[in-house]
Length: 367
Image (cartoon, rainbow, N blue to C red; front, top):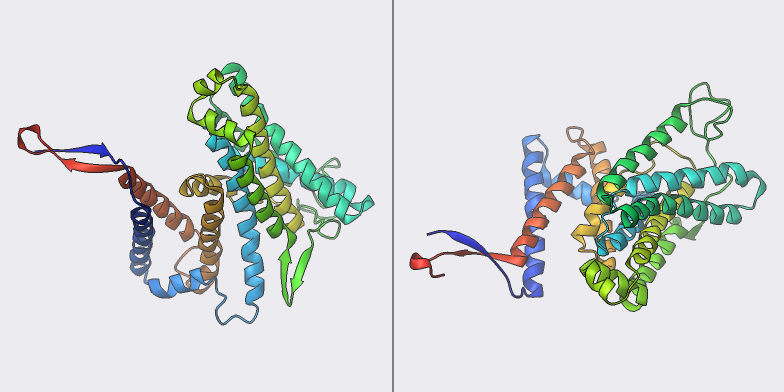
């Protein structure tokens, strides 16, 4: 008697939902056991984390403003990565593209900000960030279509090229390095928030950053682009089978270049939103959105609408864990990374059982 795996013909939507909810709850139970082992009440910790410390907080609106600063770059980066992933182009270079976009946006703010109106500077920051990140991404795509190189390996390596460029700019005091404060004795990035900063719409005391609205608008446009346009259909066909796309007369190489450029451009735009909101460059400007965005895209099964939901939940984990860490000193804020990994692993396990079932072999070879 043994077991073998059989592919499911169908799986009802309610059953899929149950599998995924069970996976998330299981991850929370695992996290709760670890919290209990550290001497922390899991219910108290989770309550603090999921409410992001806003309950009983007189300035809860400030906490929510800061939460949105985490959500916006993650959601937009995840949407951008899903574009390339739908085409089965494995763009693992979100971190590097985000960094290049950040550097380009900061350069525009520092060089042109003093002589241009703030609105014009912000537009130029976005365009520069999109172009820098787009070229960084399409460089890998060009090598892929011309020489058949492995995009996963190349985009991964280019992440570290961009990272060490940023570190170099942040640690090198020299006359040419306008990214650093001139009067500071030690290397400190120049603050340009007074020159260019994305405006906020005031709703009472709460300030809604315009980047939040733009992110949702871009998400809606990407959804329409993928579902209702010729280009979106071509991305889907190339993702299913490049051979079929060739047979149908599609210019596959051009589609790959165009889509990867668009994907990287949107990551650059996310970087411009982040830098334009922070008002200063830093060596930790990405906050790992390039890596986390990959997880969000896959947890969402590359569905643009679901990406926003998952991004919101993952942002709660990250931002909420920082708030919880200020109350529970035994737990580091990186607990969210562990919880996120557990959720990903268990959701992928649930996805396996949604697609397949385990069947026991009966005696005589009958099932």
